[in-house]
Image (cartoon, rainbow over all chains, first blue to last red; front, side):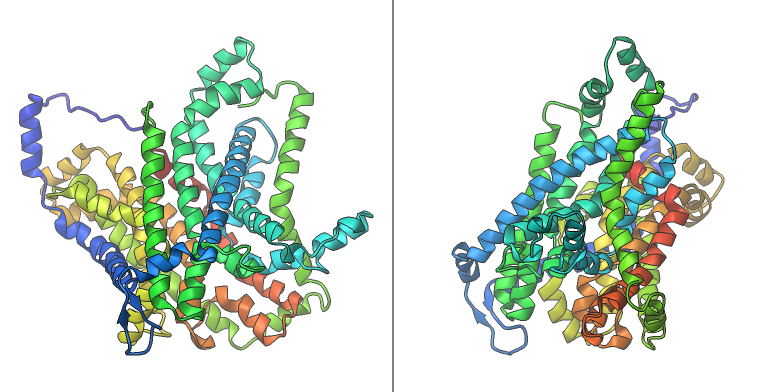
Length: 310
Length: 262
């Protein structure tokens, strides 16, 4: 975006670089506040969690028993843990695909000459800024047995389709995913909107002169040009899926029968409700490793063969 | 992007856009509609006359303001340091910070709980402010560093040649130039801290310390799940962020995009 301007009077690059280094003042004090607050606090917590994960402890009693890797072994035979992982994977795949498709379509539509574009943009983005805690009661209301959806179905004569939506684990999981899509498509859209704004209009004009239609332009010009954004969104969605807590906690409480349990809600349940702090910490460590691994794998995999940014 | 020279295509695309936006608006409409059922507008009256409500708003505002100050100070100084100053092992420190981007807040649950209770921070706003700020700083620093990287070194060198020290350079040259990204960070951090739920749920136990994200739950408990009041409370708690977003929409999107595009 910005080009680095070379000062016209600059001497040979070697000496100017040396001069620059000599001149640059020490910056360590400037990054210290951020390092202390963020790195200090967060890494302290991570190491503390690693230590806790080797204990059998209820969080309050003075009795702490070291169990080594016992909590991690216990995890392997915990069906709720495997269920959480599976739900996270489904959540990730479905929400990523739907958000990327919607995001690209919205971004293309709002780069076209249509009416009331800012109005539509704001409508798509409002769900992003609302707290899950704020909107969760609405979704519970919509899917309640006597809720909005069932009365809508009744009103159009589709009584046979009425359902107790949140008591079916599969439907409940889909509802959790749909709330996530509702809440984060706005972010995906904004990122694609900015990325598509960077495409030279001449390229699309030329393609159009060559007879390419709207869909062909999306597939052959827009989609390849926003590759970097897609990688960034994939990483964000992967980490977001692993972090999922608010939506299942508030909309479905992880139920029915652990049908919408995610690692986040399981850690909360285990650590706080069941007071198994050690096991909760072990789950946290696994979650942390998965999040880091996901970021690295997607970044490396996505960069291969292309000079994608982000 | 799309060809809209023919009226028919234009109408078609406008209809497509509208149809696709409906699912995003529907829950918002259901929320407002639900809040007006039964007693109508007096649902809002009941919620607003709740003696504890100003306290909920005040606590959320204090948390948001404190987090914004901490994050802005740490982020802007760090972005300046990382981008324009000489630091040995700079990239190592930067990666240390970036690794925190992947950190799920729920991982902090047990260690924070143990630490906060030990230092007597339980049921104080600090127990929410510090971790929320710590969790935001990695992302905001990434955004701000990308932005500061785009400011030519010559500008800062010129200030130095004119005799400005690092502090003055930061304050009089860098700070005015980084206003757009600061505005974006401000909105982003405001929304995230205003909306924080997990840490508030965990650490703020008495109603006089609780925040507005806990209001719907409070109503579920207090009013025996009276949906209309719960939804009215939800509308009221959502209004400040919607207003903040709509007012600063331009900065917010531009800032987000500028940071993420590089």
